[in-house]
Image (cartoon, rainbow, N blue to C red; front, side):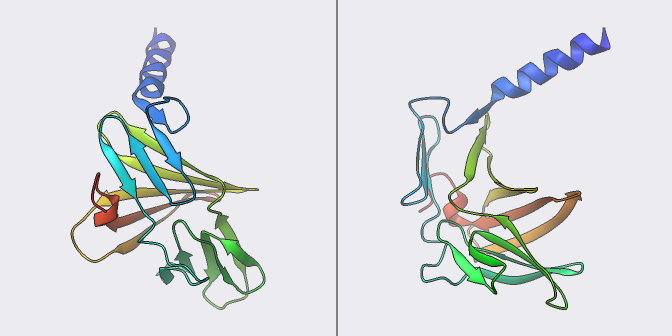
Length: 164
């Protein structure tokens, strides 16, 4: 009985989460970093990220690491983090880890319009929750919730549907 309920909930959750490639009415344009949804409108992060190789959010400290993030456009920090979207750097600068690249990102939209970006690289995965905010753009590092699995939240007006 419990297994049946668990499978039913899993099916329901899968049905309620819609990915960019599922429905032809929804489109993702990687060139300008926008997502168009037939129900909610569009999200455009192209003005949040910086062009020219510098991250929009640089060296945000959480525990023993600094995190740098730049949506849409690649940046480089040292030789270990080149052309990346997200880089993790140990506090003493001895280790650099690639946590995501802009060319390998998927958008996930829940039935109520919450947006999550999922970056996956060789042995790491980073989830960036988009949160609609009218304040100054801010990146919050929520932490490593599981070994080599990271969670961040990007607060921005551009994270709002039709915000930018």
